[in-house]
Length: 328
Length: 275
Image 1 (cartoon, chains in turn blue, red):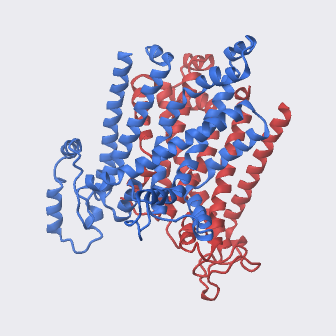
Image 2 (image 1 turned 90 degrees about the horizontal axis):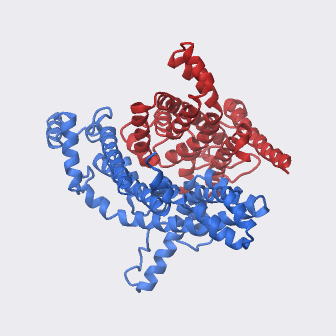
Image 3 (image 1 turned 180 degrees about the horizontal axis):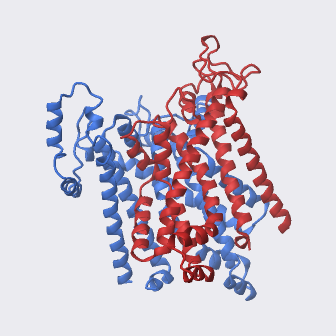
């Protein structure tokens, strides 16, 4: 187990290193360098001022020194200052937006599991039934659905036509201060229904399909045949013997689906006007605010990597075959 | 039952193939099929609901939505085909290298794939696009160069499993070069799974392209794309439902067709998996 942990941790470090290199090079190998967005489109910036900026950001030094300085900054969570008018430190901007993005993603992950596991198991047990076919259809629509369009349609139906739900923001702007905390929670919930629906629907298809197929496979295994032959009741066979084995690899699948989930934040946050990191990323790209873009890219992929790492560990803890067999 | 199921599978494949063919015809012959000029502004016919004159209505500038959607299918297909071409080329190249040579080459490539997979695609694409002029070519290259990892893994696995087989060993004994073995003996055998993932990839590329265009960093107006038509749709939700419903529906149906085609191909090309 110890050697397994060490190995995993080592590969975590290498991947982390790779992430920093790629994040760094995207910005610095861009044509015109990182300052071009700031200076090229701004006639007011004189060559002298540009020189000053180059000095200030250390862009006159060799690339590997710049990379090293950037790394040293990251460790102290110093990502520089935003190019936008407020010129605030990048980390402050991200820090205040990270919780809401993580919150929405965690909730939608929980929802995905709560929906996918029962639906997937049931449709595997009743494979080839009408129910199973319906689940398959939902899965494929989920794969093909453009999430931004789903968001627009939800806005149209529940916001514009029925007036049931608000269409934008995290909470009401008028009268929010006077609400009791219960009313505030209700207000938040109403605002979050649509974004959560979009986030959940996007991630559901993959997990649902996985649970179904994995359950179908397990139900064909010899030990299930054996359990049935022993005369165990069908319920015990399915929920005790099959389910455990079918769901184990789900931990890894969830880890792998993290990038997609988090990536979806860009879309639903910018449509529903939710002040999370996804929206920040989009705004930064529109404004060519490179310190924010670079920090965002790095932090989001770091989060993904951490999620994958934890999923790996969880899988190893849950399944002895993994931690014992890895030496091969 | 088995035959019926296969028939059903093939029926789905047939339907998706039909949809894709119709789409391709619309795209290729757009100038002859579109009833109106997709750029033709008409101030007298702003925001007309669908009617016999304008099948899918008109937009804020009085342009015919149906004609614009036909032209948009051109862009979407072009972008996705080139993007998938790029991603399959990179994937096949790196996957073949890793699988065939193994050892340190394999380790470096696999590590690189792992690293690339940690970046949420949309974030990576946004970060790259922020430094480039948004153009159709940029989008093709960016989508293609950020979505090759699946193909690379697949090709690597196929080649790993094939390279110890007798026919490859014999080719080696006869002195065939590595290049020849990879391209003549190994890759043709790895073709079925590549085809499947290319078909699935086409659908995904259309999804990404339309999302980027919707976010304002993909295909730029006035060039119509299903994604950027939806920007206007979102702004006119209260008054013009047709502007947001139809382009989205087109994306959904197209992506669905490519996805189902990929799935059917998988079933047909890999009979072992069904058992």
